[in-house]
Length: 226
Ligand code: SAH
Image (cartoon, rainbow, N blue to C red; front, side, top):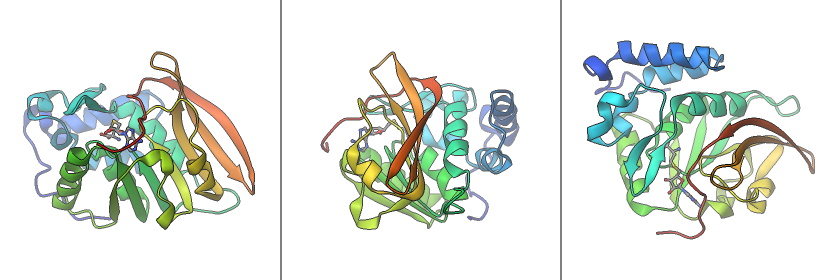
């Protein structure tokens, strides 16, 4: 949905060749959806991490993005996105997605490549502002940023065909279930630090059905803004 990224060429460890190796790694680890793989081949992940970590950007690991937060490891981003974008049997393709936890904006960019409208909420003002500038600089025009406590969702723009949470919740926040459209899917890590399960929750009319996808390790979903 965007043109060529102006700064995406990179050299050596930040080059498209390194990115292609990351994509091979994704394939070996269960990311099969070609649309997701193409988006991750295109997006310059090294521009989303702290400068000192750029050389590590295409290895399969989480990295610091400031304020004690981390960008998720590529395989987890791939698996979550793949689970999220599968068309709904009852409602068709997913056109509006809500993301809780903008962080660096990397997952946001992956979503913006694949889904028409992206709404992304972050509770840390500094991170939200940096991500907004970064994604605008990369040419994305289909993302709406919110500086807010995402445990409340973003009611003004709902309901959503898809909701993704990139921080771990103790329980699935009720507001997110309510803001999911019929046929919608929520992908969310749930559980305490060391014992988190990534879940996909599908809404069928007023009923919800949950399946476990993988064990994961995310920073906690916190209440309030800072
Ligand atoms: N998707 C991000 C991952 C960032 S880590 C990326 O690709 O970089 C998780 C993010 O969730 C952090 O930035 C953290 O501040 C944010 N977060 C935690 N609780 C939140 C809440 N209640 N509302 C919004 N954002 C939250």
